Length: 151
Image (cartoon, rainbow, N blue to C red; front, side):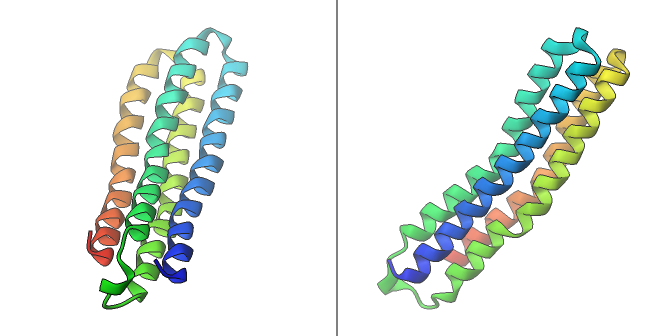
């Protein structure tokens, strides 16, 4: 593996970890604020928080998978080393918007749950659907990154 591959594998996994860690902390903070405002929903909000964080974590996992694929490429068989740059950017940059979108959906849901506990099941379903739709953008970029590195 050449230096370029290491650099872009690091970018793919680094942006994945930074983004996921930051936005997962924001989801947890939103859940804690909601519990503070409505302690009766503690169990339900904790369950939702864990689920929302798990959904947000998938984007970091995509970055890890692409980074490993980049590292496993045989440098002697590469026809264009710039594909590594493109793959690293494909998984790193667009996913920032995905994390922000997933966090906003989760934050809004958690905040509305403490305000309207009787609608918490509805918010849960809408949040999972909303995060899945936002996640689809990350999956598109994952497919592009795989195509770029020939995986």
